[in-house]
Length: 224
Ligand code: SF4
Image (cartoon, rainbow, N blue to C red):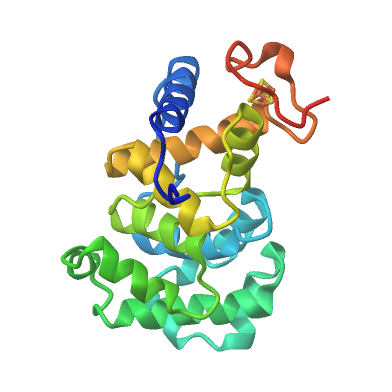
């Protein structure tokens, strides 16, 4: 029996074709709104279960303390208050402290982090309390610059409507994407951006299929 992790030629073609159509429609853009690797790490936690606007408000409140040393020294309760706008602020404050503690193992030097393999770093990030697959992959791709495909709710929705049998498991779906798309940081960063953009512009909860660039090939599974 075929493992659900191994893609058929048809599944691989479907994934490649979907991204290729979205690339033609949206063109190239840089996705994550910051070049500061530590700010990206914090943003990946702050945006959990909320939108970017709320996460950005929290980052703005931290503006004068946006360095790992300042966050390391900051009282946990004060940190939680400063990031209130992003919701779940007590848990998120603990997660930010935990990711900062992990970064301290590398003396807060991103170049030292980059010397390690993506596999090692992903395992380390996943072992941090409160860091799941999506957050780990965002940190790897956007903060560290190592290619690790980010799966989110938009990717699940778009691919399942398009006609791909999306596995429940985050890891299995990510592995499928990584089989279909060559690991390259810029591409993975861009493709996650395409999923978010498309999920917000066309493939909404109530999809706008009539105007969607994928309508000619999409099977519209589950869409009335
Ligand atoms: S055609 Fe409709 S269901 Fe398919 S991707 Fe576009 S918006 Fe989503």
